Length: 241
Ligand code: PEP
Image (cartoon, rainbow, N blue to C red; front, side):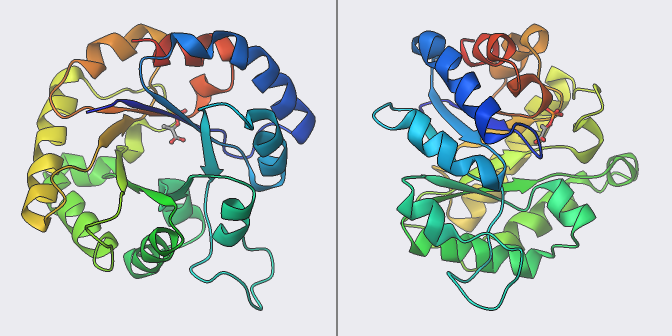
């Protein structure tokens, strides 16, 4: 399966900084060993679209509403992502779930809507530290996948990003053994749901010095990278593993 290296820029980089990043990144992007996907913040999407036109580098939004348009002040439209030439929308990132109160039911609507436009949802799942320590990781992931994919079309692409919440932005990366065990579980759950060809990315404090060990684990088909994707050097090092 082709690997995917995705960059979640969260609320960082202005349109000017986005253009500057891509001017440098395009010089080294040939080193990547898989598909490259960037998720800039919403107001920088047009800068990404212009900078990446004519390249094979993909991009998308970090969130969208489950409808194309309407009285939804402050929301993002996947229809706009499509019109600008984007390919993906990140759905259900743990910060969306925790900070903005997104439920699995809302996430399921978004996944289905993104697919209906011919875009690819990258659905994020992951357990909290409390859930891991309480031995509820499997149950949490099974619930998030079952509910989040409830309205998804199995004949259309979807990507899963497994991101343990306790490893996001904390510098505490999951060990290769934890990643191997959990990705094998996620693969099993997806298979039971009829999504066995779905790529599974790992996310959570991926850095150039731990990427090589993690990519070798079973059912790890790439990474979703936050902090280390903001610099050209560190992200291309990760995407070259
Ligand atoms: C993320 O934001 O999805 C993420 C994985 O962040 P970081 O790599 O900084 O932990």
